[in-house]
Length: 469
Image 1 (cartoon, rainbow, N blue to C red):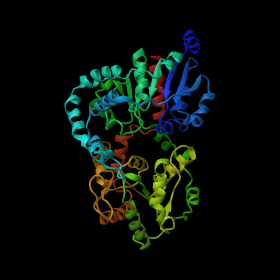
Image 2 (tube, helix red, strand yellow; image 1 turned 180 degrees about the vertical axis):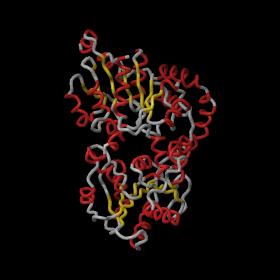
Image 3 (cartoon, rainbow, N blue to C red; image 1 turned 120 degrees about the vertical axis):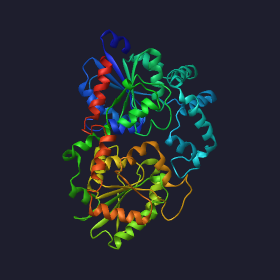
Image 4 (cartoon, rainbow, N blue to C red; image 1 turned 45 degrees about the vertical axis):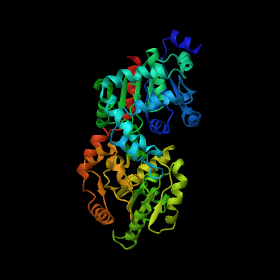
Protein backbone atom coordinates (compact mmCIF):
# COMPACT_ATOMS: atom_id res chain seq x y z
CA UNK A 1 0.00 0.00 0.00
CA UNK A 2 2.95 2.37 0.44
CA UNK A 3 3.48 2.21 -3.29
CA UNK A 4 -0.15 3.06 -4.06
CA UNK A 5 -0.10 5.97 -1.61
CA UNK A 6 3.06 7.47 -3.10
CA UNK A 7 1.81 7.24 -6.67
CA UNK A 8 -1.63 8.64 -5.97
CA UNK A 9 -0.17 11.62 -4.12
CA UNK A 10 2.55 12.43 -6.64
CA UNK A 11 5.29 11.37 -4.21
CA UNK A 12 8.74 10.95 -5.74
CA UNK A 13 11.05 8.44 -4.11
CA UNK A 14 14.85 8.43 -4.15
CA UNK A 15 16.72 5.26 -3.28
CA UNK A 16 20.19 5.98 -1.91
CA UNK A 17 22.39 2.98 -1.17
CA UNK A 18 24.65 3.58 1.82
CA UNK A 19 26.05 0.09 2.13
CA UNK A 20 29.82 0.63 2.37
CA UNK A 21 31.74 2.11 5.29
CA UNK A 22 33.34 4.68 2.97
CA UNK A 23 29.94 5.97 1.92
CA UNK A 24 28.71 6.11 5.51
CA UNK A 25 31.79 8.03 6.62
CA UNK A 26 31.82 10.41 3.65
CA UNK A 27 28.09 11.16 3.48
CA UNK A 28 27.24 11.58 7.18
CA UNK A 29 29.58 14.42 8.12
CA UNK A 30 27.83 17.55 9.46
CA UNK A 31 26.27 19.36 6.51
CA UNK A 32 27.18 16.37 4.35
CA UNK A 33 25.29 14.70 1.52
CA UNK A 34 22.56 13.25 3.73
CA UNK A 35 22.00 16.54 5.55
CA UNK A 36 21.95 18.43 2.26
CA UNK A 37 19.47 16.03 0.65
CA UNK A 38 17.09 16.21 3.58
CA UNK A 39 17.39 19.98 3.88
CA UNK A 40 16.84 20.64 0.17
CA UNK A 41 14.18 18.11 -0.76
CA UNK A 42 10.56 19.21 -0.94
CA UNK A 43 7.62 17.62 0.89
CA UNK A 44 6.77 15.52 -2.16
CA UNK A 45 10.15 13.77 -2.14
CA UNK A 46 10.77 10.68 -0.08
CA UNK A 47 14.25 9.32 0.63
CA UNK A 48 14.71 5.61 1.28
CA UNK A 49 18.15 4.75 2.65
CA UNK A 50 19.24 1.25 1.66
CA UNK A 51 21.84 -0.17 4.02
CA UNK A 52 22.96 -3.04 6.22
CA UNK A 53 22.09 -3.61 9.88
CA UNK A 54 25.71 -2.76 10.72
CA UNK A 55 25.02 0.93 10.12
CA UNK A 56 21.55 1.15 11.65
CA UNK A 57 22.67 3.18 14.66
CA UNK A 58 24.58 5.72 12.58
CA UNK A 59 21.82 6.22 10.01
CA UNK A 60 18.75 6.01 12.27
CA UNK A 61 18.81 9.75 13.21
CA UNK A 62 17.99 10.68 9.60
CA UNK A 63 14.64 8.91 9.85
CA UNK A 64 13.46 11.58 12.31
CA UNK A 65 13.00 13.79 9.26
CA UNK A 66 9.81 13.80 7.24
CA UNK A 67 9.60 11.14 4.52
CA UNK A 68 12.97 9.53 5.27
CA UNK A 69 13.10 5.81 6.00
CA UNK A 70 15.56 2.90 6.07
CA UNK A 71 15.35 -0.46 4.36
CA UNK A 72 17.88 -3.18 5.17
CA UNK A 73 19.17 -5.15 2.21
CA UNK A 74 21.62 -7.99 1.72
CA UNK A 75 24.61 -8.04 -0.61
CA UNK A 76 24.14 -10.65 -3.34
CA UNK A 77 27.53 -11.25 -5.02
CA UNK A 78 28.02 -13.33 -8.18
CA UNK A 79 27.27 -17.02 -7.63
CA UNK A 80 28.02 -20.09 -9.69
CA UNK A 81 30.59 -20.69 -12.37
CA UNK A 82 28.82 -18.76 -15.16
CA UNK A 83 28.36 -15.57 -13.15
CA UNK A 84 31.89 -15.70 -11.79
CA UNK A 85 33.39 -16.28 -15.22
CA UNK A 86 31.41 -13.37 -16.61
CA UNK A 87 32.53 -11.16 -13.74
CA UNK A 88 36.11 -12.10 -14.55
CA UNK A 89 35.50 -11.18 -18.20
CA UNK A 90 33.93 -7.76 -17.66
CA UNK A 91 36.28 -6.78 -14.82
CA UNK A 92 39.28 -7.00 -17.12
CA UNK A 93 37.89 -5.08 -20.03
CA UNK A 94 40.39 -2.54 -18.74
CA UNK A 95 44.00 -3.28 -17.80
CA UNK A 96 45.64 -0.21 -16.30
CA UNK A 97 48.78 0.26 -14.26
CA UNK A 98 46.70 -0.43 -11.16
CA UNK A 99 45.14 -3.52 -12.71
CA UNK A 100 48.58 -4.83 -13.67
CA UNK A 101 49.85 -4.47 -10.10
CA UNK A 102 46.76 -6.14 -8.64
CA UNK A 103 46.76 -8.92 -11.23
CA UNK A 104 50.45 -9.75 -11.02
CA UNK A 105 51.63 -8.71 -7.55
CA UNK A 106 48.75 -7.36 -5.46
CA UNK A 107 48.57 -4.22 -3.35
CA UNK A 108 49.12 -5.88 0.04
CA UNK A 109 52.59 -7.18 0.79
CA UNK A 110 51.51 -9.75 3.40
CA UNK A 111 49.85 -12.22 1.01
CA UNK A 112 51.08 -14.21 -2.02
CA UNK A 113 51.35 -12.20 -5.26
CA UNK A 114 47.87 -11.48 -6.66
CA UNK A 115 46.37 -13.64 -3.93
CA UNK A 116 48.02 -16.70 -5.45
CA UNK A 117 46.36 -16.15 -8.85
CA UNK A 118 49.21 -14.47 -10.63
CA UNK A 119 49.09 -16.98 -13.49
CA UNK A 120 45.81 -15.39 -14.67
CA UNK A 121 47.50 -12.07 -15.45
CA UNK A 122 48.23 -12.76 -19.17
CA UNK A 123 44.59 -13.78 -19.71
CA UNK A 124 43.38 -10.61 -17.98
CA UNK A 125 45.60 -8.50 -20.19
CA UNK A 126 44.41 -10.37 -23.27
CA UNK A 127 40.75 -9.62 -22.47
CA UNK A 128 41.52 -5.89 -22.15
CA UNK A 129 43.59 -5.74 -25.31
CA UNK A 130 41.02 -7.54 -27.44
CA UNK A 131 37.42 -7.14 -26.26
CA UNK A 132 38.26 -4.12 -24.10
CA UNK A 133 39.36 -2.07 -27.11
CA UNK A 134 35.78 -1.66 -28.33
CA UNK A 135 33.37 0.80 -26.73
CA UNK A 136 30.46 -1.15 -28.26
CA UNK A 137 31.40 -4.20 -26.19
CA UNK A 138 31.63 -2.11 -23.03
CA UNK A 139 28.45 -0.09 -23.58
CA UNK A 140 26.21 -2.63 -25.30
CA UNK A 141 27.39 -6.23 -25.25
CA UNK A 142 28.45 -6.33 -21.59
CA UNK A 143 25.14 -4.95 -20.21
CA UNK A 144 23.16 -7.25 -22.51
CA UNK A 145 25.09 -10.26 -21.24
CA UNK A 146 24.74 -9.07 -17.64
CA UNK A 147 20.95 -9.11 -17.86
CA UNK A 148 21.03 -12.57 -19.44
CA UNK A 149 23.35 -14.00 -16.79
CA UNK A 150 22.27 -12.18 -13.61
CA UNK A 151 18.56 -12.97 -13.54
CA UNK A 152 17.75 -13.40 -9.84
CA UNK A 153 16.64 -9.77 -9.33
CA UNK A 154 17.13 -9.75 -5.53
CA UNK A 155 15.67 -6.26 -5.05
CA UNK A 156 12.51 -6.68 -7.14
CA UNK A 157 10.12 -6.56 -4.16
CA UNK A 158 11.82 -3.45 -2.80
CA UNK A 159 11.26 -1.66 -6.11
CA UNK A 160 7.67 -2.94 -6.26
CA UNK A 161 7.03 -1.48 -2.81
CA UNK A 162 8.42 2.00 -3.35
CA UNK A 163 8.42 2.51 -7.12
CA UNK A 164 11.43 4.88 -6.94
CA UNK A 165 11.83 7.70 -9.42
CA UNK A 166 15.63 7.76 -9.04
CA UNK A 167 18.28 5.38 -7.71
CA UNK A 168 21.57 6.80 -6.39
CA UNK A 169 24.43 4.32 -5.91
CA UNK A 170 27.57 5.95 -4.41
CA UNK A 171 29.69 2.77 -4.70
CA UNK A 172 28.81 1.79 -8.25
CA UNK A 173 31.96 -0.29 -8.66
CA UNK A 174 30.69 -2.93 -6.21
CA UNK A 175 27.74 -5.08 -5.27
CA UNK A 176 24.98 -4.42 -4.19
CA UNK A 177 25.15 -1.15 -6.15
CA UNK A 178 25.58 -2.99 -9.46
CA UNK A 179 22.42 -5.03 -8.92
CA UNK A 180 20.44 -1.94 -7.88
CA UNK A 181 21.41 -0.27 -11.16
CA UNK A 182 20.36 -3.44 -13.00
CA UNK A 183 16.90 -3.47 -11.42
CA UNK A 184 16.45 0.24 -12.12
CA UNK A 185 17.40 -0.23 -15.77
CA UNK A 186 14.95 -3.11 -16.15
CA UNK A 187 12.21 -0.68 -15.08
CA UNK A 188 13.41 2.42 -16.93
CA UNK A 189 14.17 4.26 -13.67
CA UNK A 190 16.82 7.02 -13.71
CA UNK A 191 20.14 6.21 -12.07
CA UNK A 192 22.99 8.31 -10.71
CA UNK A 193 26.23 6.57 -9.79
CA UNK A 194 29.39 7.56 -7.99
CA UNK A 195 32.60 5.85 -6.92
CA UNK A 196 33.41 6.03 -3.23
CA UNK A 197 37.17 6.37 -3.67
CA UNK A 198 39.54 7.93 -6.18
CA UNK A 199 41.15 4.62 -7.19
CA UNK A 200 38.00 2.65 -8.09
CA UNK A 201 37.72 3.63 -11.75
CA UNK A 202 41.27 2.59 -12.61
CA UNK A 203 41.19 -0.98 -11.34
CA UNK A 204 38.31 -2.89 -12.94
CA UNK A 205 35.55 -2.30 -15.46
CA UNK A 206 32.06 -1.69 -14.07
CA UNK A 207 29.53 -3.73 -16.10
CA UNK A 208 26.55 -1.35 -16.06
CA UNK A 209 26.49 2.38 -16.77
CA UNK A 210 24.41 4.68 -14.64
CA UNK A 211 22.61 7.40 -16.57
CA UNK A 212 24.97 9.85 -14.90
CA UNK A 213 28.13 9.31 -12.88
CA UNK A 214 29.61 11.72 -10.32
CA UNK A 215 33.39 11.84 -9.95
CA UNK A 216 35.66 13.71 -7.60
CA UNK A 217 38.05 15.35 -10.08
CA UNK A 218 39.02 15.83 -13.72
CA UNK A 219 41.46 12.88 -13.89
CA UNK A 220 38.61 10.63 -12.77
CA UNK A 221 36.39 12.14 -15.44
CA UNK A 222 38.97 11.11 -18.02
CA UNK A 223 38.96 7.60 -16.55
CA UNK A 224 35.16 7.45 -16.80
CA UNK A 225 35.10 8.58 -20.44
CA UNK A 226 38.24 6.69 -21.46
CA UNK A 227 38.41 3.36 -19.67
CA UNK A 228 34.68 3.10 -18.90
CA UNK A 229 33.31 4.51 -22.16
CA UNK A 230 30.92 7.03 -20.62
CA UNK A 231 29.85 9.94 -22.80
CA UNK A 232 31.30 13.20 -21.51
CA UNK A 233 27.81 14.61 -20.92
CA UNK A 234 27.10 11.76 -18.50
CA UNK A 235 30.00 12.66 -16.18
CA UNK A 236 29.77 15.40 -13.56
CA UNK A 237 32.74 16.53 -11.43
CA UNK A 238 31.75 17.32 -7.82
CA UNK A 239 34.82 17.11 -5.56
CA UNK A 240 35.43 15.06 -2.39
CA UNK A 241 32.51 15.38 0.06
CA UNK A 242 34.68 14.16 2.95
CA UNK A 243 36.97 17.17 2.49
CA UNK A 244 34.14 19.69 3.02
CA UNK A 245 35.02 19.94 6.72
CA UNK A 246 38.50 21.16 5.79
CA UNK A 247 37.10 24.43 4.47
CA UNK A 248 35.82 25.48 7.91
CA UNK A 249 38.87 25.16 10.14
CA UNK A 250 37.68 27.50 12.93
CA UNK A 251 34.66 25.24 13.46
CA UNK A 252 36.24 21.79 13.20
CA UNK A 253 39.91 22.13 14.06
CA UNK A 254 40.78 20.99 17.59
CA UNK A 255 42.59 23.90 19.29
CA UNK A 256 46.33 23.26 19.31
CA UNK A 257 46.64 23.36 23.10
CA UNK A 258 43.84 20.84 23.43
CA UNK A 259 45.31 18.61 20.74
CA UNK A 260 48.77 18.64 22.34
CA UNK A 261 47.28 17.94 25.78
CA UNK A 262 45.38 14.92 24.41
CA UNK A 263 48.65 13.30 23.29
CA UNK A 264 50.85 14.65 26.09
CA UNK A 265 52.91 16.76 23.71
CA UNK A 266 54.87 19.59 25.27
CA UNK A 267 54.12 23.12 24.12
CA UNK A 268 56.48 24.27 21.38
CA UNK A 269 57.14 20.75 20.07
CA UNK A 270 57.51 20.29 16.33
CA UNK A 271 56.00 17.19 14.76
CA UNK A 272 57.08 14.83 12.00
CA UNK A 273 53.88 12.95 11.24
CA UNK A 274 54.22 9.37 9.99
CA UNK A 275 51.09 7.82 8.43
CA UNK A 276 51.31 4.02 8.48
CA UNK A 277 50.72 2.01 5.33
CA UNK A 278 49.74 -1.12 7.27
CA UNK A 279 50.12 -4.36 5.29
CA UNK A 280 50.96 -2.42 2.14
CA UNK A 281 54.39 -1.64 3.57
CA UNK A 282 56.44 -4.13 5.58
CA UNK A 283 59.53 -2.12 6.54
CA UNK A 284 58.13 0.93 8.27
CA UNK A 285 59.71 -0.01 11.64
CA UNK A 286 63.13 0.46 10.00
CA UNK A 287 62.12 3.99 8.99
CA UNK A 288 60.72 4.81 12.43
CA UNK A 289 63.78 3.55 14.30
CA UNK A 290 66.07 5.61 12.13
CA UNK A 291 64.06 8.83 12.43
CA UNK A 292 63.83 8.31 16.21
CA UNK A 293 67.61 7.91 16.29
CA UNK A 294 68.05 11.13 14.30
CA UNK A 295 65.72 13.00 16.66
CA UNK A 296 67.63 11.68 19.68
CA UNK A 297 70.87 12.92 18.14
CA UNK A 298 69.36 16.38 17.67
CA UNK A 299 69.70 16.17 13.89
CA UNK A 300 66.54 18.22 13.34
CA UNK A 301 66.97 20.60 16.24
CA UNK A 302 65.39 20.66 19.69
CA UNK A 303 61.75 19.97 20.63
CA UNK A 304 61.11 17.45 17.88
CA UNK A 305 58.86 14.38 18.05
CA UNK A 306 57.85 11.67 15.61
CA UNK A 307 54.06 11.42 15.67
CA UNK A 308 53.03 7.94 14.51
CA UNK A 309 49.53 7.29 13.23
CA UNK A 310 48.95 3.53 12.77
CA UNK A 311 46.43 2.16 10.28
CA UNK A 312 43.77 2.04 12.96
CA UNK A 313 40.94 0.15 11.28
CA UNK A 314 39.50 -3.11 12.52
CA UNK A 315 40.94 -5.54 9.98
CA UNK A 316 44.53 -4.35 10.55
CA UNK A 317 44.41 -3.24 14.16
CA UNK A 318 45.99 -6.31 15.75
CA UNK A 319 48.71 -6.43 13.10
CA UNK A 320 49.47 -2.76 13.67
CA UNK A 321 49.66 -3.18 17.45
CA UNK A 322 52.16 -5.99 17.02
CA UNK A 323 54.08 -4.02 14.40
CA UNK A 324 54.51 -0.93 16.60
CA UNK A 325 54.66 -2.50 20.06
CA UNK A 326 58.40 -1.80 20.30
CA UNK A 327 57.78 1.94 19.96
CA UNK A 328 55.30 2.28 22.85
CA UNK A 329 58.05 3.47 25.21
CA UNK A 330 60.30 5.28 22.72
CA UNK A 331 60.75 8.82 24.15
CA UNK A 332 60.99 10.30 20.65
CA UNK A 333 57.77 8.74 19.34
CA UNK A 334 54.13 9.51 20.13
CA UNK A 335 51.51 7.05 18.90
CA UNK A 336 47.99 8.14 17.92
CA UNK A 337 45.54 5.22 17.99
CA UNK A 338 42.49 7.39 17.35
CA UNK A 339 40.50 6.41 14.29
CA UNK A 340 39.93 9.03 11.60
CA UNK A 341 36.32 8.14 10.87
CA UNK A 342 32.97 7.29 12.49
CA UNK A 343 32.53 9.99 15.14
CA UNK A 344 32.90 13.70 14.42
CA UNK A 345 35.43 14.11 17.22
CA UNK A 346 37.66 11.45 15.62
CA UNK A 347 37.43 13.25 12.30
CA UNK A 348 38.35 16.53 13.98
CA UNK A 349 41.40 14.98 15.61
CA UNK A 350 42.43 13.43 12.29
CA UNK A 351 42.31 16.70 10.36
CA UNK A 352 43.99 18.51 13.27
CA UNK A 353 46.80 15.95 13.19
CA UNK A 354 47.46 16.81 9.55
CA UNK A 355 47.18 20.54 10.19
CA UNK A 356 49.59 20.67 13.15
CA UNK A 357 52.25 18.49 11.53
CA UNK A 358 55.39 20.27 10.33
CA UNK A 359 56.20 17.51 7.81
CA UNK A 360 54.17 14.45 6.81
CA UNK A 361 55.59 11.08 5.78
CA UNK A 362 53.37 8.48 4.14
CA UNK A 363 53.29 5.83 1.47
CA UNK A 364 51.50 6.33 -1.84
CA UNK A 365 48.12 7.30 -0.36
CA UNK A 366 45.26 9.80 -0.26
CA UNK A 367 47.08 11.55 2.57
CA UNK A 368 49.16 13.40 -0.02
CA UNK A 369 46.02 15.19 -1.22
CA UNK A 370 44.77 16.01 2.27
CA UNK A 371 48.10 17.41 3.45
CA UNK A 372 48.33 19.52 0.30
CA UNK A 373 45.02 21.16 1.27
CA UNK A 374 46.78 22.32 4.45
CA UNK A 375 49.97 23.14 2.49
CA UNK A 376 52.03 20.71 4.55
CA UNK A 377 55.27 19.32 3.04
CA UNK A 378 54.82 15.62 2.28
CA UNK A 379 57.37 12.88 1.81
CA UNK A 380 56.55 9.50 0.31
CA UNK A 381 58.74 6.55 1.21
CA UNK A 382 60.03 4.92 -1.98
CA UNK A 383 62.45 2.33 -0.55
CA UNK A 384 62.34 -0.80 1.63
CA UNK A 385 64.16 0.08 4.79
CA UNK A 386 67.43 -1.79 5.30
CA UNK A 387 66.67 -4.69 2.99
CA UNK A 388 65.94 -5.24 -0.66
CA UNK A 389 62.58 -6.90 -1.15
CA UNK A 390 61.20 -8.59 -4.27
CA UNK A 391 58.94 -6.36 -6.32
CA UNK A 392 55.71 -7.97 -5.08
CA UNK A 393 56.63 -7.02 -1.50
CA UNK A 394 58.47 -3.79 -2.24
CA UNK A 395 56.89 -0.44 -1.54
CA UNK A 396 57.94 0.74 -5.00
CA UNK A 397 55.18 -1.35 -6.63
CA UNK A 398 52.59 1.13 -5.30
CA UNK A 399 54.25 3.90 -7.29
CA UNK A 400 52.93 2.22 -10.44
CA UNK A 401 49.28 2.45 -9.37
CA UNK A 402 47.48 4.62 -11.93
CA UNK A 403 45.66 6.92 -9.54
CA UNK A 404 48.81 8.01 -7.69
CA UNK A 405 50.54 8.96 -10.92
CA UNK A 406 48.18 11.95 -10.92
CA UNK A 407 49.81 13.09 -7.68
CA UNK A 408 53.40 12.41 -8.69
CA UNK A 409 52.97 14.27 -11.98
CA UNK A 410 52.51 17.55 -10.04
CA UNK A 411 55.91 17.21 -8.28
CA UNK A 412 54.15 18.22 -5.07
CA UNK A 413 55.33 15.16 -3.14
CA UNK A 414 58.95 14.15 -2.63
CA UNK A 415 59.60 10.43 -3.16
CA UNK A 416 62.73 9.48 -1.21
CA UNK A 417 64.85 6.50 -2.31
CA UNK A 418 67.23 6.01 0.62
CA UNK A 419 67.82 6.93 4.26
CA UNK A 420 70.26 9.62 3.17
CA UNK A 421 67.63 11.05 0.83
CA UNK A 422 65.04 10.93 3.63
CA UNK A 423 67.33 12.74 6.06
CA UNK A 424 68.16 15.55 3.62
CA UNK A 425 64.55 15.99 2.54
CA UNK A 426 63.31 16.15 6.12
CA UNK A 427 65.92 18.77 7.00
CA UNK A 428 65.05 20.85 3.94
CA UNK A 429 61.32 20.79 4.64
CA UNK A 430 61.72 21.53 8.35
CA UNK A 431 63.95 24.51 7.59
CA UNK A 432 61.90 25.77 4.62
CA UNK A 433 58.32 24.42 4.69
CA UNK A 434 57.43 26.72 1.80
CA UNK A 435 59.40 24.48 -0.58
CA UNK A 436 56.97 22.96 -3.13
CA UNK A 437 54.08 25.09 -1.87
CA UNK A 438 53.18 26.17 -5.41
CA UNK A 439 53.18 22.54 -6.53
CA UNK A 440 50.91 21.59 -3.63
CA UNK A 441 48.41 24.21 -4.80
CA UNK A 442 48.50 22.66 -8.26
CA UNK A 443 47.79 19.27 -6.73
CA UNK A 444 44.75 20.58 -4.86
CA UNK A 445 43.41 22.26 -7.99
CA UNK A 446 43.93 19.09 -10.00
CA UNK A 447 42.57 16.53 -7.57
CA UNK A 448 40.01 18.36 -5.38
CA UNK A 449 38.05 20.25 -8.04
CA UNK A 450 36.88 23.50 -6.42
CA UNK A 451 37.81 22.56 -2.83
CA UNK A 452 35.26 25.07 -1.55
CA UNK A 453 33.41 22.98 1.02
CA UNK A 454 30.48 22.61 -1.37
CA UNK A 455 31.01 19.07 -2.71
CA UNK A 456 28.20 17.61 -0.60
CA UNK A 457 25.85 20.34 -1.77
CA UNK A 458 26.75 19.71 -5.42
CA UNK A 459 26.03 16.00 -5.01
CA UNK A 460 22.68 16.62 -3.32
CA UNK A 461 21.65 19.28 -5.83
CA UNK A 462 22.48 16.99 -8.75
CA UNK A 463 20.47 14.11 -7.30
CA UNK A 464 17.42 16.29 -6.60
CA UNK A 465 17.66 17.94 -10.03
CA UNK A 466 17.65 14.56 -11.80
CA UNK A 467 14.86 13.30 -9.59
CA UNK A 468 12.68 16.26 -10.51
CA UNK A 469 13.75 16.44 -14.14
